[in-house]
Image 1 (cartoon, rainbow, N blue to C red):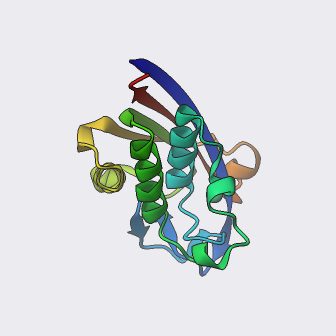
Image 2: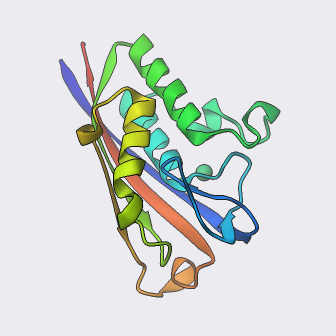
Length: 160
Ligand code: MG
C-alpha cells in the first residue's frame, strides 16, 4: 500500500454578472468568476490535487478549456470524473484539504454544504473533505478583489 500526496492551485478572475460557484454552492452575488466551465476555483484546485496524487497529469490535460464539452461544465461533475479515473487505477482518496483565498464572500455559512458537495462528487464521507478560507489581507490582486484563488492537497492510497 502506498500513500501519495498531491497539490492543486487555481485562480480565476472576478467578472460582473457571472455566477459565483464555490465547492458546488451557488452564492447570491452580482459578480462571479470568469472561466470556460462554471469557474469553481475551489473544485478545480481539489481536482488538480487528486490528479497530482494519482500521477495523472493536470486538469487542463483532462478537461481542456477550449473543448466545447466542458463549456459551463459543473466542476463537481469534473470531480466525479476524476474520482472514476482514480478508482479505475485502484486508487482510493483518503482525504482532501482545500483553502480558498478571497476577500469575499464569507464562506462559513456555506462550508458544510461545500464539503458535502465535494465529498459526494468524490464518493467520500463528508468528514474526508476539509474546506477553509482566508483573506489576502487586501494585498495584491486577490486583495483588490480582482480574482479568487484556491489551494488544495489530497492524499490517495494505492494498492501497489
Ligand atoms: Mg480553473
